[in-house]
Image 1 (cartoon, rainbow, N blue to C red):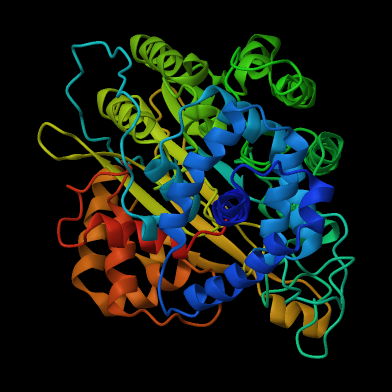
Image 2: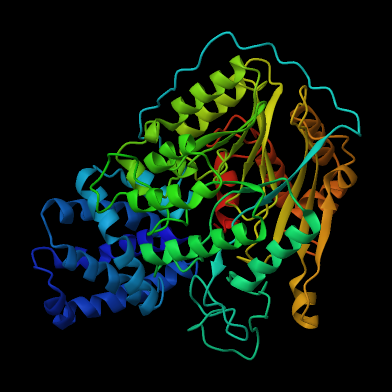
Length: 595
C-alpha cells in the first residue's frame, strides 16, 4: 500500500500537468493560477465518480502520466516543481490527507526521481506494479535470466521418520513484529491514515486502541506487547533456536528516517539479547527495515547517498552477537549470509527484497541482484558435497505475486535441484498463516514448501501470533525435517478486557491436520485433503490463515484462491491453477495484502 500511495499520487497528478503544457510550473505561480486550480476541482469531481464506480479511468490515467513524468524528468524540470505538483495532486484528489501526502512524497523523492532519470519507464508494467491487477496482468519487460545450476541431481530419497525418543530441536519463528514506539492506548483505530492507534491519531467514541494492541484497525503493536511475547517464549517455550524473518519498524512509512529505523532495530535486538542470552538467533531482512521502505538498491547500483550501506553496516554490528565474522561479510555487502549451526546443519538467510516489485531500484537491473542466487547455488553445492542439510530463511515468499518472475522462477529451480539438501524454508511478510509448495518440472513430485509464519503485529485486524517448530536432530543421522509445529496466539479482546495476557495454543499441526510429520510429501497429501473437503478446510486452514478466534466467511472464492496459493511456489505462473485465471489470483492477492 505504501508505494502504491506514491505512485497513485503520481498517476493522478498527470491531470495537474496536462492542461498546463507550455506553462512553466513553479510552485508559487501554480498556486496563484486560478484556472489550474479550477481544473483540479473538476478533476476531483471526476475522480469521485471513478471511485464511486460510475466509470474507471485510473489505469489509463496512470499510463498517460508515466509518459508525462518521463518528459518532465528528461526536460530537467526541477525536483521541487515535480514534488510540488505531485503533492498537490495527492492532497486535492484525496489519495491521503495533507500530512501523509506531504511526508510520503518527500520520503520517496530521491529514489523515484533517481530511477526515473535513468530508466525508460514502461507504463503498463509500472501501473500494474503500482495499482494492481485491475490495470491488467504483469507485462514481462525484463529479459529473463538464469543462474547456473550444476547437473547430476541426486535421486531424491524419502526421509524416514525418526523414533519418538530421538533428540529434537525447538525452533521459534518470529516474523513481522512491527513495533510502534508511539502506540497510544485509547487512541483512534480508524484515523484515516495508513497507520493508526498512535500519538496524533486522535480519539473516537467508537473504536479505541486497547492497552495490549488492537484488532479493530490498521494498527501495529506497542513495545511492551513485544516484550511480553519474548518473556513468554523465554519462560515457557525455552527455544534452542530463534529464526527472525524480518520487518521490525512500524507501518508509518510516510515519515521514517534512517536513524528511526536503526532505533527500532536496536531496541528489538536488545530485547532479544536480554531475553535469550544463550540462544542462537538467525535473522533476516524485511522490506520495512530500510528508509524509505522497500528501498534496497543492489550493490554498486547507486551513489553512497542512496545506497543501503548505512543499513548493512549497522546489521553487521547488530547481528555479530549471533553470527561469526566469516558470515558477516555478505551481510555488509548485500544483507544475506550463510552460517554453520552444527556439523550437519547450515542456515542460509536471503535478502528477498531483491525480488520485491516495489523495490524501484530493480527496475534498473533485476538480474540476480547482489549475485545472491548464484551464491546460494554455491552454498548448496558445498552442503550437498559434504552431506550437510540446509534451512533457508527470508522475508518475502518467493511465490508471492509481488516477487519478480525471473527471481522466483530461478529460486524454484534451485529448490528442485537441491531438494535432498534443503530441509526447511521459513518466510513471513504476508502477516498470514500460509503454505507455498514447490514441484519438480520433470515429474511433478513435491520438492519442498515454504512456511509463511503469521505475524506478531496486529496489522490489520488480526491477533498477534508466533510459531514453534519441532525439528529432528541433532544427532549424526538426523534429517532435520520438521516433525510438528505449534502456533500461539494472543486473544486481544480478552487481554484488553481483563488486562492480562494469555498466549494460548491456536493449533498444533499434527492434531489439526492429522499429520505424523511435515515433509513435502505429507504436505501435498494435506493439500489434497483440504482441496476435496471444504468443511475441513474452513475449520482449519481457512481459519488459521487469519489467526482469528472467530471463523471466516469461507466462501467459494476464498477457498479456491487459498488452495491455489497453497501450491503456488512460483510467481506469475498461469499454468498452476488452470481453473482460476491469473488476473483473479492477482486480484485476490492484492485485496489481502497487508505488508
